[in-house]
Image (tube, rainbow, N blue to C red):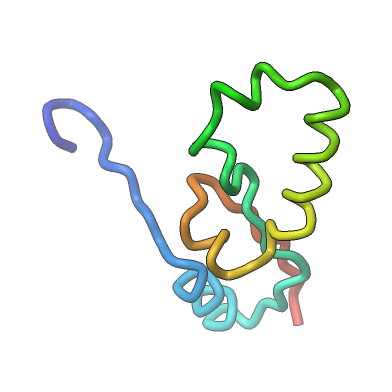
Length: 82
């Protein structure tokens, strides 16, 4: 803790995958929850439904790419025991 604030922990997609491998887990799905959205979050909030749907479909198409995983603020890994 620094100044009473809990330190955050950041990891790379490779580190997360190694951790799953270490504990003998298969990765079912690994994706970025927010992806690129934080870069233009104010615009996202202004989009109409059609614009948001276009963005959402794009996000779904790239959210599993390593470059997006490594820069995203939040990711999710779904695992399964081997």
